[in-house]
Length: 95
Image 1 (cartoon, rainbow, N blue to C red):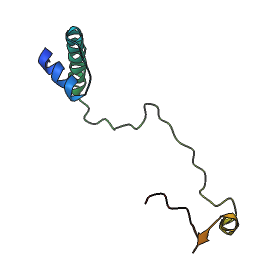
Image 2 (cartoon, rainbow, N blue to C red; image 1 turned 120 degrees about the vertical axis):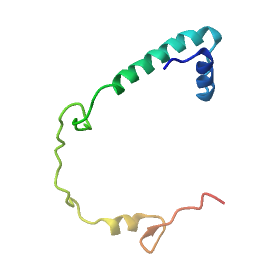
Image 3 (cartoon, helix red, strand yellow; image 1 turned 90 degrees about the horizontal axis):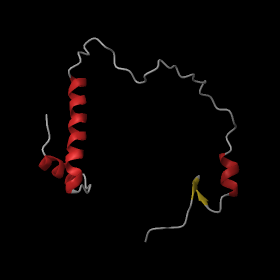
């Protein structure tokens, strides 16, 4: 696939990028190189290759999910300016 200067101008307009007439040819060559590389990647046979989430086989160490502090809800409610039914009341912001 090869882009024309008009294609570059259209893409730039859609992307809301200002490209001067002097930059159009350089941008066209760069975009054509990128598209050529994508075509190369698409031509590779990847059947039987398992997708990876990371380039390196990394295992995340997980800790046990357990409560480490006591329930302090009542303590926090006691120092709040206003509460009602275990909820914190705040000033109205939107009228």
